[in-house]
Amino acid sequence: MTERRFLQLDVFADRPGAGNPLAVVVDAEGLDAAAMQAFANWTNLSETIFLLPPGDGADYRVRIFTPRQELPFAGHPSVGAAWAAIESGRADGAKAALVQDCAAGLLPVQVGPECGITVRAPRARRIAAPSASAPRLERALAGLARGGIDAALWDNGPKWWVVELADEDTVRRMRPDLAAIAELTGDSAVGLAVFATAPPGAGHDIVVRAFCPADGIPEDPVTGSANAAIGAALADAGRIAPGDRYRASPGREVGRDGVVDVRVDADGEVWIGGRVQPVIRGTVAW
Image 1 (cartoon, rainbow, N blue to C red):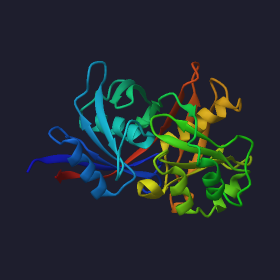
Image 2 (cartoon, rainbow, N blue to C red; image 1 turned 180 degrees about the horizontal axis):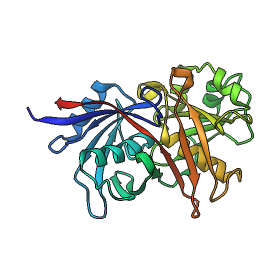
Image 3 (spheres, rainbow, N blue to C red; image 1 turned 60 degrees about the horizontal axis):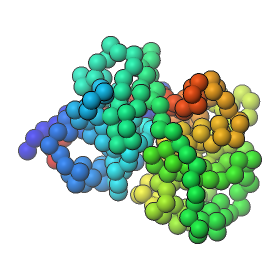
C-alpha cells in the first residue's frame, strides 16, 4: 500500500489548539473520489483535503471533503491547502501570490509575513430559499433576538444560512437546537451561521458561530466560507465598503479561540485569512 505524506494543521489559529483542525493528504495522486470520501469520513474532521498536481494557470490543486460530501470551496481548507502546498514543496514558497485550483475554479491566494495566508472566496450571491424554509428558520432561531440584516441563504460554493443576532452576548449564549437546524439546512445548505457586532474593546469586530449538524458537524469551530458569506451580507447591506477589513472571533463556545481576518477589496470581492499551525506530521496508508 502506498504511503503518502500527511499533515494535521490548525487553521485560523495563533497557537496550536485554538483554531479548526484540518487533515491534509499531501500526495493524493492515485486516490479516487470514493477513497477520498471514505478517508474524510474516517478522520471525522469538519474537512479533509487532498493535494494534487495543478491544472493550467494554478500553483496547486486541492479537493475538499467533509465527512459526508465534497465541497467546491471551503475557507479553512483553502487557507490550510496553501500553507501545506508551500510547506511540502508542491508550491513555490518564495512567491507572494499563488493560485489555487479547486472545484470552485481558480482562486488567488496571498502569502504574508510568517506565512499568514489570505484567499479570495468565490463571489457570494444571495439565493432564493426553499418554500418550506420560513417556519423551519423560526424553529431554528426560536427565542433569539435578531439583528438588522434579514436572514438569507448565501452561496459562495457551499451554501450558508446567514443570520445576524442582536449582540455578542446573544450569539455566545445561544443553545442551538441541532435537530431544528438540521431540518432547516437539510439538502439546501451546509449549515447555519449566526453573527453579531462585538462591543468596543473586545479585541475583535464580530463574533461568529456556525452549525452543520446535517453534515455531521454539530458546531464548526472556525469556518472560513461562513465568514466570507457574512462579509458578503455585510457588504450587501452597506455595513462595510470596498477597502474595509475586520476581525472575527469564532470557536470559544467549543473550547477554541479562532481568528479570521476578513477584507473587501476594491472590486467588492471578499478575502479571508489567518495563521496556520502545524500539529501532526507523518504518513498515511489508505
